[in-house]
Image (tube, rainbow, N blue to C red; front, side, top):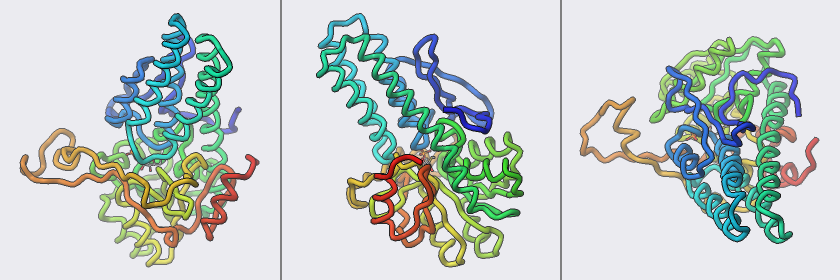
Length: 358
Ligand code: MRU
């Protein structure tokens, strides 16, 4: 599937010649662009846990590709061993990060392919082919979704808009153009003059390190702000709209996204500016209620150290939730590849997920 815009940055991709999963190590950005490739699911799992690969769609795609690349290393094994090892890889990748729905969506699809191949009596070679085709389909669908999200969302962006975003929902979080950043990119490509305010996004600084790098590469005017500045700019009338991504959207319309999103949504509501969430339908989880969603708690060291430097007392307790929850009434609309969803979310999210792709 071709999209009519250039893809200048890839977070994760398939190397056909070596049948390995490749990614850009986002921990090294923006100062160095280092590519890693592997066919070892434990290595890819570690890359996801450590945030070399991060962002909901990107971790889903990377995990699916990791199962496919591992399957090719097992084609010489007896059938039973092939299936048990490939399914074990699915479990390893499943337990990397608990919050983003895309990871479980992608791994469920790959696991289904493996089980269907096993039940049909497929050889390891045939199963490796089937699993690779499915993983590549997941990646291609994500590339196309990025584009469609950008097309739909760009209609919501007025000319000369000042946009606030949080974390990185860009190319570095997906397979191609991003989600929130696809909206900005396509608005920009269509000739709209926009300016973006990017929060630094403590503690891991995805905004400062990744969003700013991406947008500057694109030539889109971007200004870095501290997380604490967002409310002030909104109150001053300097922001026309907020666009963020999501890690999981529940059937009721609760949006789970990078910690700090909720405070921005509250400020947007209070000051009557739109708060948009851009996400593929693979982020929407119709099966769990918000009470069931596991909010990842990460190592407190990420809060206590900034770029390797201790900024508090070594023995200071610190709390490091990676995500927060934004209530549905704070969300103006959710921009998906199948169209723009407005409240009431329980009804309209179900409809959009179950609808055929346009
Ligand atoms: O911890 P991260 O960097 O994986 O968190 C990423 C986010 O919260 C993004 O906003 C979300 O995954 C959407 S990415 C298109």
